[in-house]
Length: 241
Image 1 (cartoon, rainbow, N blue to C red):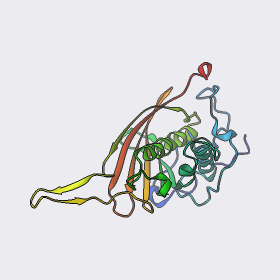
Image 2 (image 1 turned 180 degrees about the vertical axis):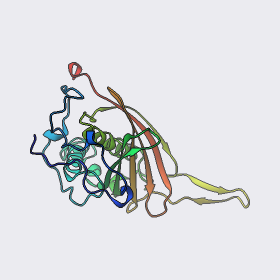
Image 3 (image 1 turned 60 degrees about the vertical axis):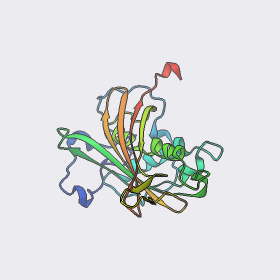
Image 4 (image 1 turned 90 degrees about the vertical axis):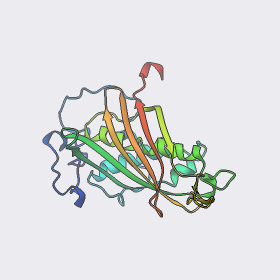
């Protein structure tokens, strides 16, 4: 494992030009001799997954190695094989950016953010021709997990868990705006086939077993927020798997 690429961070992007990784996070992921946190058996280890897709076009200030591990984890457990639920939906997701920085508001604690995009296809629509709420929940569940996996990799702990709870607010699909002045009803821009969604997910907290992240899904064409969500994940007890 000591042959893994180092450092964890690549050259900082313009957004984080002033960001300098601390000495505790500058060693190779899963490398070095650090004994903290102590290793423990986990149910999913990203570094043991086969490479799935090409992460070379993903922007952001984490290393190419970390980007590849995030992509591997997303494809392996979000998409699965062609017989798995939501396979075609997850395979349509393209990650644009994976980044991390030390948050001043959180007293220097690390925060990770991932940005993904997906073009809505007919298979993602409901009978009314709009993006199905269940499909959107599936996208949020998988994409909102990725900053937690990222943060786990950067801190040399496991950030892959199972979803404990997810709170989603649907802001615009299928709703209408009513002009009370003349009683005319104007439909909002609905998410239909061909729409591009941008999914921005950010880590909130990493505990011993409980992890939290938040997410916004934006209509890339209009800039309107389609949905926002909070996600809680937990590390399952190995004895119960």
